[in-house]
Image (tube, rainbow, N blue to C red; front, side, top):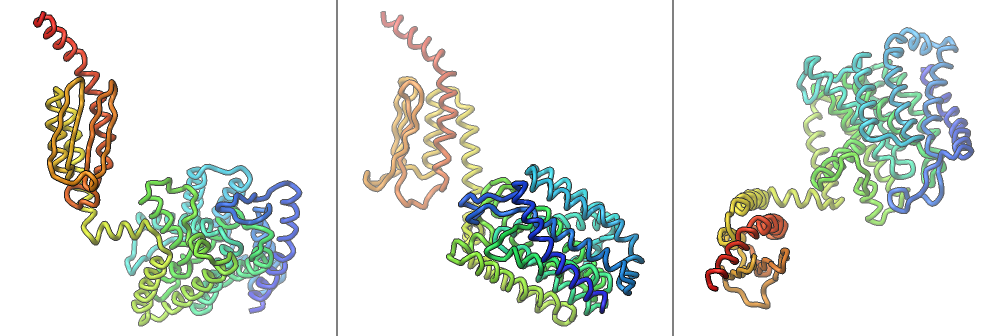
Length: 478
């Protein structure tokens, strides 16, 4: 008990003292984060490597404990083989984050380093062996452990977009893991989490809105990595059959934000590792909440999720807690108003997804037929078939001196839109479609690019042949 108290107080005091010291050094050497009025909304330059103070406070407090003669010091020394095995992985993650803070690494460089650190942690003894009540062999445990640790790293890193949010959410998650350690009598987990709690509490004095220092990647990646490791230690000693469910809940907000970010960017066909303003905290800011309110709200939600994770220690509450948690998460995401998920849901539930697939198949078929056309007349026949398939009410084409017109359906002039596709030499294709018409396929807007690209190529192919034919006809007439 005295050892834990020593760790908590020492790490807290060290963090209070070292954070302003590191902050002043950052100002001196120009290591600041500049506002950009888009994602970085702070009004002035802010030091960005505050994670150095957190790391130093954690390390020094543990070293000091080993010199006091308290029981906890002996326990840490006795556990030194595990600590020494895991230390290189933690140092690697910290170095990657610091390097990114100083020199801005490419996304795949960061990811490669995180994967290497996660693999090192696995071989040090951090193993995810049970998920959802299913136990995995070592062949599956390795990729699952890497996925979990890399996910936790980036989850805390991505949510670090509002003053005090990443540190506050991490503090709540650390406290829940400390309480879980007490409930499980997991001494090693308790000694690992206490100094992190003290460091984060001291750091929040300077990081909460309005912040005077940021964690930086060196701080957020390292904290996420440690929380991931602690979550595995929690699950290994847990009595629940669902294993990683409780740590997942304790880290629900950052992990959910990461999952939403990846899903959104996938649906929008944007780079997965790119930056945007679609994170949960950005959505709340856009709804009119202040940065301080957003941080407090998300930390409060994280506290509720952590309470649910602690309830998982009672096997009878496992399923009800998971169901309630899942339903609450679904409603919460709905309230954020993500257009991507609403659109995807409509496509799946209303049958639009099948119609979209059908339209793409039809478009590819017509593209093949048009590309295989051997004369202007063949091109026109393909376009007539396309006009019927896509619900056009008027189609006109001029190609190498030949004019074609058809009206597949009747619709008033004022009730239709026109689309002209210009070709070289004054040739063109003109399409008309009735406004709000629901028949046919709904991707008519994809047709012009396809038609123009192929017909331009056809013009070049047909021109010599038709030119010779016109010359021979003229000669015959003379």
